[in-house]
Amino acid sequence: MKELLIIRSASFQQLDKNLVMIRERFPDHKLSLLTHEHGVLLAQKYKDIDQIYVYPYTESFAYRRKVRELQKKEFETVIIPVTNLSGAGFVNVFLFSLTLQAKKRFVCNVISELREISRTQILLMGLGNKLFSFFSFLCTMMVGFLTVLLLPLMLVQIESKERK
Amino acid sequence: MSAAEQKIVRPLVSIVTICWNRKAEICESLSRIREIDYPNLEVIVVDNASTDGTPETLEAEFPEVKLIKMFKNIGIEAYNIGFKNVKGEYIVILDDDSFPAKDAVAKMVDKFTRDAELGVVAFDVRNYYNYDEVKKAEASEADAAQQETAAAAENYLMAFNGAGAGVRRELLEQVGFYPEEFFLYWNEQDTAFRILNAGYQIKFFSDVVSYHKYSPQNRTSWRAPYYYTRNAFWLIWKNYPLDMALLLTLKLIYACFYYAMEQRTFIYLKAMGAAFFQIKQLKGKRRPVAREIARKLRIPFYVAFTFYR
Figure 1 (cartoon, each protein chain N blue to C red):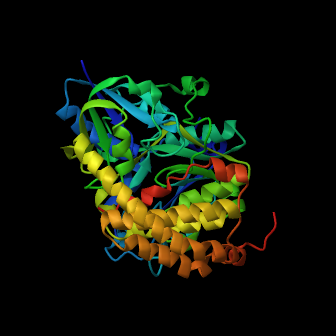
Figure 2 (figure 1 turned 90 degrees about the vertical axis):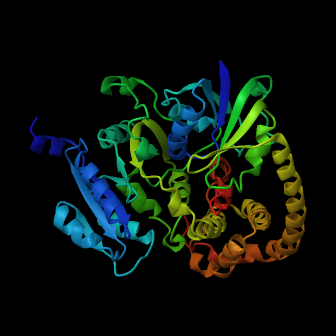
Figure 3 (figure 1 turned 180 degrees about the vertical axis):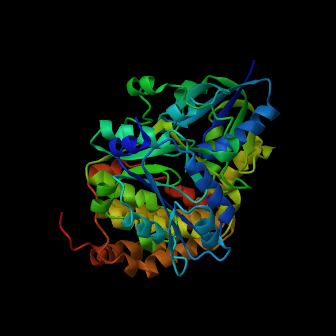
């Protein structure tokens, strides 16, 4: 049977909706879900999900935070749910999906539209990511200098007078 | 046991919700709340000066509800007005478009009764529109006592979702209510810091469910990215020890620039500016939590950058 993995990058509330469309679009696939540890028990309620994998990190999905357990597995399809229409703000999850062996990758947006996304498109996003990162770093250096100087003073000023 | 006797045995639970111009949603939620299988409930609705006839409808159709009317939209501060007016030992916090499952309140009270260190019972908030498709936990009452239903992680802590959470009233009074200066968003996380720092636990339970009319349309306006971003800075500044606050602030500044470029918008930079220029609103409110709590509580700050488009 073909295997499909959903990366849980959206809330369970959204997944409740997305799952109906995913099931419709991929009726002959065995569904698995990758979620952070706190989501395991909540994910077990889905009768459609055959297997749950734990993302063994506290932080968000990222290319550098690979899941060893999944690296040798081959998936027919990987689904990346996003909490908006375009997928903006989810480049880290798209890049993470490249650490998985998958024939096809789909973005599932907040209104459950499924759109295929190629490896090349994700790599191009990654390239854009590098460019934005560079300029963001420069801007942060400029603003950050003032922040490091002033923020401690600002924080002292807003400190509560009450002692525990 | 008669209904009157059950009332005496079971502690009073106060349900608190707020609304603003969402008459259909709040009415549906209140209808569902009537179906809750728990004998000793009070329901408080704080109306944020709705102009769509919500207060009039609630007064006419839900006379059992204690309605408190605000003179203008004061955002999440309305919850605090509700909290000040509760009489219950436990408070259930809901959104105007969410409601607990029929058995959720009774299960919540049982969890609190069994564990004195449990400060918040975080409900498993599910999508209302898939009400029937989400397989409910099938454990019987008796099984539930033995079965572990707390959805926890070993190395980190979680906050709770304001569309379904139970909290001890005395604890909430002790640590303080929602941060009214936030107006919208991240208020649960700010409260979670203080509850955890007071030595109490926050636990999600898979068998305590609430249903939410999860509405993507609500989040496509400027409000979500703006308030999520501004309040992310404030959450850091109010709760983290100095060195951690500095580092997280720099990371967040970087993220504001990054996502402003990625999404071609100034909204994140505007929100960042507002965080700095309106910092006076936090005067007297910074209380850094224990380093262990700051390190362990999982706050998904970058969620702020996922609502714009």
